[in-house]
Picture (cartoon, rainbow, N blue to C red):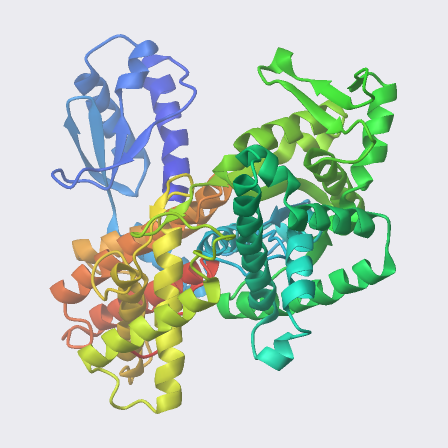
Length: 593
């Protein structure tokens, strides 16, 4: 509808000038409500600011003008201040022909010489495996990157791996004390899980020591600070920062275990990255920038030697950027990493950070500091802030080992898909290998769709079984519709490539062509709003409309050949759009189900 809307906007502006001698700046359109005849509605009320009169009379005159001057408008009706326009069927047939002739309709190829966008997601710590919260982060970031790319921009996918700090030292120390030299190879465990087990072990031993210290007469706060195992982990961190060979060697070894483990999870989840950044490489980069900013008066030094920025005029607070001993804080690292990324990729015009909403304030401060430092690209920094994922059983805690492990969840989703598919009993003709592949496609599709269909800002209560339902607003329901369409296409034994130019459209056909035609607009809107939910909701609407069409009109059994060809074309393009839209969500579609 977009192209005719633009054309009619020009027409309405001309009509208002011609009929009433007024120049209106824009026109508000709506889809015509189903109770009334029409395809597109002009809202007349805003024109009353420019011309006095009865809105129904203005609408009537406007309708007559458009009908006389635009062949696409065959009729109109006026309901109060709303002008409902009936668009000729030939317009829709021409639009369908354009869709048929455009490979991957709606997807725009990136300009290799244009500005690029960098999207950061995942950004895990190296002391534990990925969990359900990371899954939402990865799915969101990956999908947003794909959507922006489909809108015609060059995109770099990146992560910053938090591979330094006290957290990894805790795992390292626990492994040294209790590990007996075990490795991923000797245990058969993924490396990230093995390291995560020792993070949990550290916490267990730490709590035991706290309890003993409290019994000896210390307060809880004193015990927490003086527990020997914590003091030793802090000493290990200082040794790492000073470059102690033995500590650095252990750090490298255990981090490699984790990276290998992450790689398996990313592959199973279907996400990837173009470039990785490591906190151990970037945490000092921002220090020089801060010291330069100090000379320019952007930052100031306190008596103890620490460096701060005062953002109270902007409604924020004062923020430390260098400690008194000259060491960097997280903010300093993020400043340096952003600047390094632009240096590495000068074509980047904007950065999108996919990070949970508990970091909202951090990113407000970061973006403001980068603007004050004078970086023009700082005007185009976005925090894709998302809500947490809850489970029916409550919150997750990594150090207590009560997280929902990402790998376990992927396996559980596949198993749930297997159980439900076997109950439905529709896969008798499949080999065992084909079945297993299909179970994984359905299980992962259910997981991804359930998470991505929700507006990123909202919290999610995740229920695995509810997500794998072959009815309703679920991934499997949409996958099943795609497979049904492919089944119809496989039965076609005639050429259906000709353009159908003169036929009366059924309302269901018209509705589907309208939806197919709006796909580029949906991609654009989803990219600008950093919201895969807009793609998911669009696809659900398309699938519901197609299933209603499938139930209402004969497709292969139509007696009119032109009708049959048209309905096959609509079916094929609906399938193509489902496949392309689901690809933007990182979801596969099976050819058969």
